[in-house]
Length: 105
Image 1 (tube, rainbow, N blue to C red):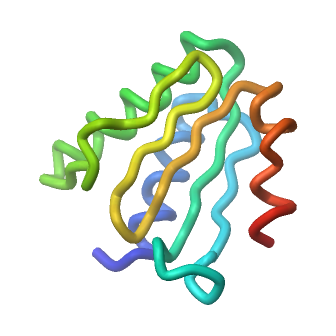
Image 2: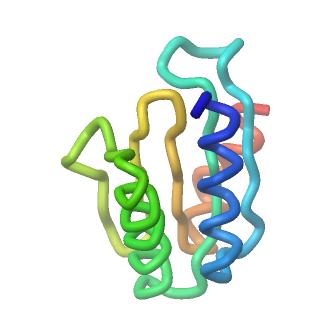
């Protein structure tokens, strides 16, 4: 599975788990860190954690595990690193505060 296919798959997982305003941002030409960011908003800290858990569970079923097992985790922002795709799961407040869309688009 290439980077774009993985990003699309992650977005679908998040959408199926009722993530809000999910989007894929191609950052490959702006950084060497990764090819894509997948951003999504959860409705509560519990939902943010559930979205992260769902991505990890569904991808691990296909043998895809995060590159960095020490995921960045808080009540308002979780980042999952799949090397060429980094998933950012935010609370509404954190997404507005960090505004990665504006920074990376």
